Length: 358
Image (tube, rainbow, N blue to C red; front, side):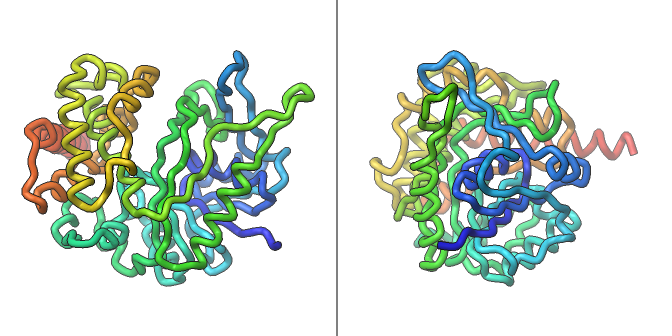
């Protein structure tokens, strides 16, 4: 059985999935900035994982794993050379020069493409029956970059595991802070599903030697036939991630959720209801209590809040996407409307500050 060539756009979060793919002997190409590519090509990457029941973390060194990894810039890639593409950048990045052109080439290649973003790509939203994707375009930074994708060849993998780049380490080090599973929905093309099922089995079988003991590693890939399972992340984003954003700064995810649990539960349950109205079932979603327990350990602000604090003029607008999808079903929630309005204000302030500084 031959190994796969897998392309992943985004070396930060993408290296977590890549580390698991390398155990299967596959070849992974990471698309990233030149300095990061040079570092990965010379030193590989490291992924640090906490292990339940153990005090010490384990470190996965890509150079010691069976597969091989390399990195390159967006202009050096031919998508037709790959069996599977992973999208692990932030949504606004896909409209940037170089990446935009690569994304369009990926779309036209019809290679199965798996998004690992908090923001489902627009073609994925077209796979949801009864949803008008045209009215969702305003939630996307550059909606036109998705025009040439065949929705059948694009799927969504919920980025539930949490990871950070430690600020005092090199850019090829990733620290996993919440080692949960990737949950991926089926493609509407069988070639892609065959690949995902094989990768799921290989990752499930991974064992890692620590001081002579063979241990199982967290962070699995879970294949689901339902296209709604990855949307379970929406409720978490609205109750936690986007509520890390405050009027003049940010708070961490634990504070966002636990300072007012009843308010968190209210918006969480509303988003769950939206997903059910779209076609999901309760069994495919995550109960609030389970999410709240996990959020108790999230001691950093979400990436959207950090980006706004750092002056970003565009961030992923999953908040706006959920709001627009809910409105199509005649559903609204004042807390969600407040989040969207707050993010709008913060982005506008950042844009004005950038113009003033120019």
